[in-house]
Length: 257
Image 1 (tube, one colour):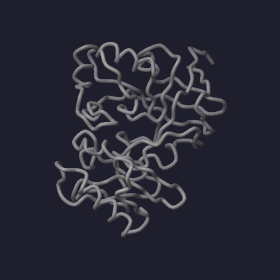
Image 2: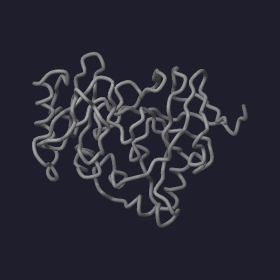
Image 3: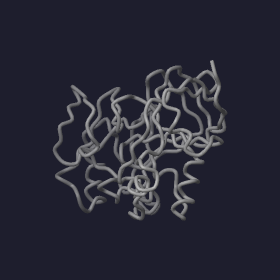
């Protein structure tokens, strides 16, 4: 088993509701071929849509309320409780909605809040959707999304401005590996204690990365900049969980063939 480098886990994030704000984690338990617990377990359809909870299928992000089209989402903060599956949405430090997403009334409370938050681009009443075991990821596979801190630093230097890692919706932010080297790790594995992640795909970026995750301002043109400068729009990679286990911020990992 050849080893081609080591690095560290700088941060962990999950997104219980697709398109809403990330939740930072100190540690997380992963299971084989799964996502982080509750990662993108819920989504908000943008008006009447095709998602069928009884027969869940992977759908393109265009069907959902999302930062790419609805940057106002970045102006609110969300918090999700695993035990009660209750979502709280706040703005400027004040709670504006709370709902148990397992109930019709709870989902309606969140839908009403989205109508107030998203001022343009809604195609009808939003609908909170879920199907047990389904993940509303941008890719079909259940996986984790990895962003490299050194690549982010390189991109900041190229653009001449600081960038928040959350702009790229990572599950893992890794550090201490060479800038852009993650793009060449497709087919390789990250081993963290007893956990094994297999990188299988580069992340092609969309206009959601143009939105500042703190202010909601559409202040960059990152995909077009990457395309013009590097000849591609890739930033980050997707990885499958082969062997489950616990990841903790600060853990070291090794890259192997």
